[in-house]
Structures are given as structure tokens and as C-alpha cells.
Amino acid sequence: MIIKLINAMVNIFMILPIKARLIVSVVLLIVLANVIYEIYSFYTYYSALNGIGRKLSEAPGFLNWLILNID
Image (cartoon, rainbow, N blue to C red; front, side, top):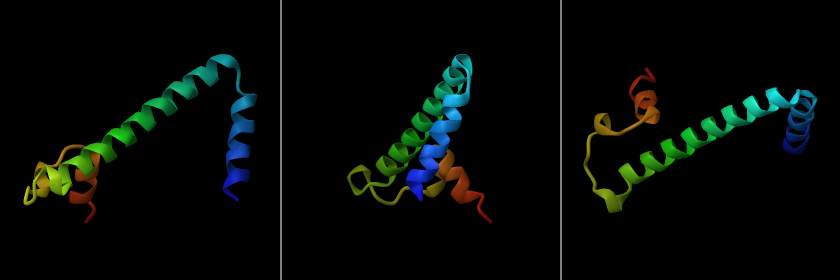
């Protein structure tokens, strides 16, 4: 199922012209970099090695905003 989904996405990507492929690739790289940074900063902030007992409102990034605004 996941392989078929990835295959369909690659096929759609290959239909695009070169400039559109470049733009899509850059956007996907920026999104991936942001996701990795958010997970890394969230993990390092809340890891036991980095200190326990910090307030949630002090955490950096989008994940903190999402958790605080989920209600």
C-alpha cells in the first residue's frame, strides 16, 4: 500500500516539467528540514540529559504551539 502510494507520487512528480520539479524538490526539502529541526529541538528540550522540570510554555517551535493550542 505504501509502496503504491510512493510510486504514484513519483509518477506524478515525473510528469512535471523540470522547473516545477526543482520548485517541488526545494519546497519538500525545506519542509523536511523543518520537521527534523522541530523533532530534534523538542526531543533535546525534553530529554532527561537536558534537565527535568522545565515548563511546557518555554519549549521552542511549532510542536509546543500545537500542544498548547490543541483544545
